[in-house]
Length: 216
Image (cartoon, rainbow, N blue to C red; front, side, top):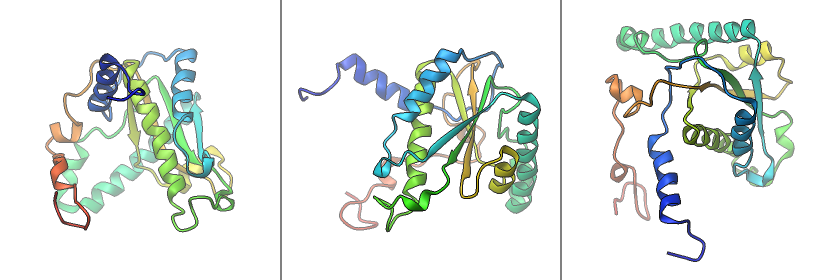
C-alpha cells in the first residue's frame, strides 16, 4: 500500500478488466454512440509512446462497401493461411477469425509515415513504434471491455493491399483491423482455447530470473 494506490474496488475493477478482456469474433450489430467511441479513442490516445512519437493512426470505416472490400482481403488471406498450415488447414477453416460484417464499428490501426525521423528510443530498437501502437490498441481494448463492448483484433490481411485500399501514404503501415461493438456475452476463456486450437501457458513457464531459462 502506498499513498498513490487506488481504492480496493478500483484495483479490483482494473484487474477484472484485464482478466475478462477477450479477442471477440461474435458481434450483435448495433451501434456505438459517437461520444462513447470518442471516449474509447481518447483512452487509446493516452497510451505510452516511445519518444512521445504517438505513431498510431486510426481510420474509422463508415462506408459499408469499403468494409466489404476489407472483409474480402481478410478472406483471401484466411485461405492462404489455411494452405500454409498444411495438416491443420481444415481445422483452421472452421474457426471464426473475424466479425467485420457483424460488428458495429470497424477501425483500422496503422503506423504513421515518416517514422524514421523519430530516433529517441528507436535508434537500436526501431520496432518500438510498433510497441507504442500495440499499447494504444490494448488501451482501447480494455476501455471497450469496461464499457461492455467487445473488440477483436484481425491481422489476417496483406498490409500493402490494405494500405492501397485505404490510401495510406508511402511508409505508413496498417497493423490491425479492429472490430468493435455490442456482443451477446464475453467468452469465459480465449476463443482459441475453447475451440481446442491452442492452450494458454502458465506464467511460471515464461518467467526467468537473471538469465534466460533460469526459473525463479
